[in-house]
Image (cartoon, rainbow over all chains, first blue to last red; front, side):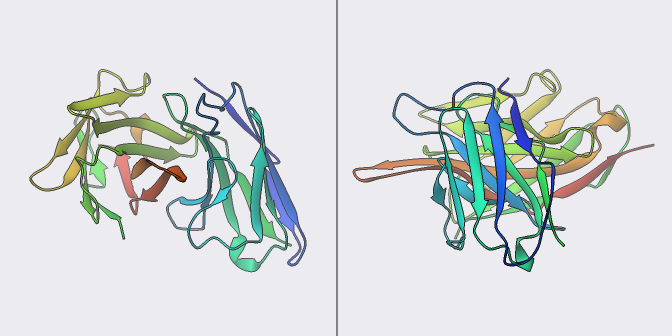
Length: 112
Length: 128
């Protein structure tokens, strides 16, 4: 199975400051079609996970443009340009290129 | 707008079968661009994909090795829903269970692939 490794696991951030989360996969997530099958999810307190970013760098519908993401075949980054209070929760990377779909351990973002 | 509504018991006795249903609105279980997934979440295992069903001229299924032999995912086209059945449960199966849609759509100038819709989650406790 593909192992997804995130860092840091805990991320305290002052409102208005930037934040960055890393994700590394044990195998390349680059498909022969040129797309990278890496998604970012956010699980807000008490809620189901929700899609933030798909195919490594595309914001899902309704996601603010302060969220951006990038990455190559195995190394990925999610960035928040200016953290807001509503961004608290656990961020997960996940891969859907190889079966089984696998998830990172999660990064808990909290407001200082 | 696609929505997934989960239903099923929150308490299951050890050795019995855990059964949950995910009702789909705004899409069809037979959509040949989608797969319908079950995922669970626990403190010890994090998010764990359990399996999926999907239709590509015929029905297919994939299951996680960790639950293979105990799991069945069944689509129901008449009710536009799919269900999870996990037998011989133990306390280790205690978790929040989610259903989710994964879709991949390819058009001339656009490609979309994501696990984009999740159910509300069902907390299942395995205990006598």
